[in-house]
Image (cartoon, rainbow, N blue to C red; front, side, top):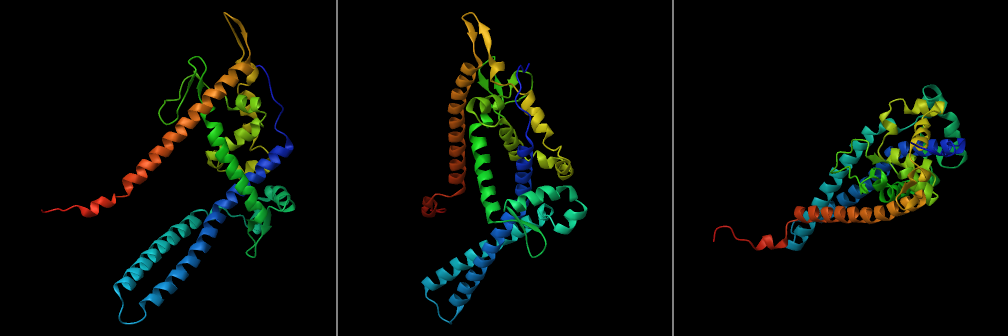
Length: 297
């Protein structure tokens, strides 16, 4: 049972999280848009190179090899362009048109104005809200925070305090009352805002977007009530204190030991993931010795 409480989620944090969530939504279209522009430039350049290599009637073997290579590169670039354009079409709903905001999402106007005033948002020539250069920089910082969250906090989501074990979502059936979520306690001990940790956790798992009315709830100011409830309900450092035969064991000592164990386990899991990725890549790429194999004699 939680015995202490943290401050409630501030108005400023709600505003910041709302701006970051909208920025994340917009970048789901903007990222493939930028990739498309780069690919279009690449395709144009490769077409010119292929056309140049095709000139003339007689080609050396080396010229034919270069031509075939450039053709393959062009084909791959065109395939990549097709996939990116498909992704853009799928993420068209992530865009915000200023006219539609004024009618369907008018409750978002104060937040969008806040983002414009902070220089992270602008309106483009097509009247769509678009992240500015500063907005893209803010988004990159958000991505870095998400990566840091996964690296340093995910491992504490399922901890068996009785057994001193960490649950693995990939291999364990994480059901039952034996598992405790200690991410808030870890954040508290490290002096990191627990609300930010929970926000990053929900954002990294796309939990916000599972709610079809998330923009409406955001405009009402209720979307992040769940974050507040999660933080208030989770165990904090004080809750980890207990007594044994030797006397009082303080929560600070418990969480310090858990963090050290979690660090070791997180490194081990990352190492295993890297080894798996390298193995899969190696298996996908045939060894050059296969070229020397004979088949009939």
